[in-house]
Length: 460
Length: 68
Image (cartoon, rainbow over all chains, first blue to last red; front, side, top):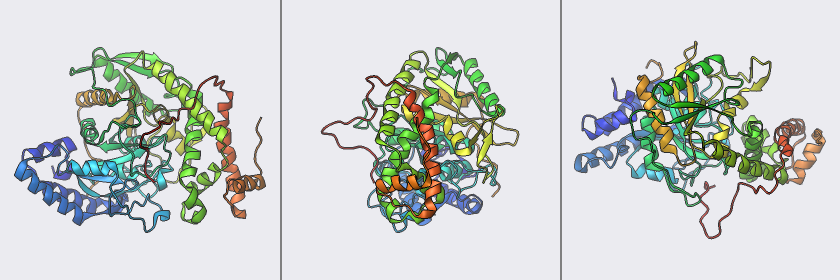
């Protein structure tokens, strides 16, 4: 096994035990990027020299005084919406030509303080306003979409081009590409990870979170970046299930919404994973997802006017520099009204309260992350067995958006593959600030099935 | 009841919002705006009663939202 194949947990252990130096690890990951990046397009920028210099510093510090923590000397990537002082934040957009960030985002600052080694910046769907990341190819089949908008981060992690990566999630942008590329992704509770210095798509729905190869890996990253946001009412809550099994845990299984218009193989894999949770001691409980009819309306009613507001100046100054799909959404967003926005805000209040009541009866909610695996590039719509069609983007957002609206933590982890060999993801959600609960359940599941952390099968 | 926007109406509404649109943009923006409207107008079905908006304001605290 080569160093780039190690999960974060394994690499961190090897670095701590002085079996692996951060320089060897970083060189191995950079060589892997060289070997596969031409087929993937995961990175906007690879800062190889700076990464090697940081790895040398980490190696020296670790040999002198031991590691600062589990991320010390670990090479990672940031979605190119996340500011790093002195580097451009391109948002994968021509609009940002010439941009250089003046200071680190809070997340970059914390990862730097933890000793992580920055490899470079990964592609996003332009300004995070889309679900495919067209610049990037899927890790498992390069003719298929990477998913988005954190497509570059997911593909880098899935192929050994980063040990972990950061993404952002406004309607599924961490979880969708994580699921489509067979990696783990966490959208933490709204407000738990600071967004300062991260380009916004929609302030009230944006989240920053990690992508990595195992649940334990994302838990290690979350510990380094989580905050008690001054705007939030509570910090993370410790998990109350301390044991190695899931006895006493109530797993909500949705009766509506999450299994509607879902590919049969996705449904089969996720229901199989829920059965596995039951075998581990969890009690499945049927639940009704409240206000499901209004999920898309609330998501759009918040996101569309907020995104248009964020881009107000540049949409007027340089409209031709936006990609066509993003430009028209920003322009049309000018036509939403204050009344539309307030209805979405008020419906969000109702949905948050209804979800809180739903979680009175369950500890976690388990569901598919996305209704279908990675589609071919260029495919625009998907047809369902009930005769309806929807756009690929609407399909990929549909099962992720509720956690953005309600702010609950949502973890995706791989639970199988379809007949084409493409990965399938399951989401685990819990009450706000119970991020530790979804991580614990995810980890116990992952350990029980084995084989976690494998790379996508992509020859060098 | 709501009605669909013509391309000319979309252009006029956008202009009123401070966004002049070139002639070649009118039809596409009207179609997209109509689609967005059809999705979000389902919220008109809800009786909100006394429910306040989810956005909130706290005096005297630094804004912790994403930096521009």
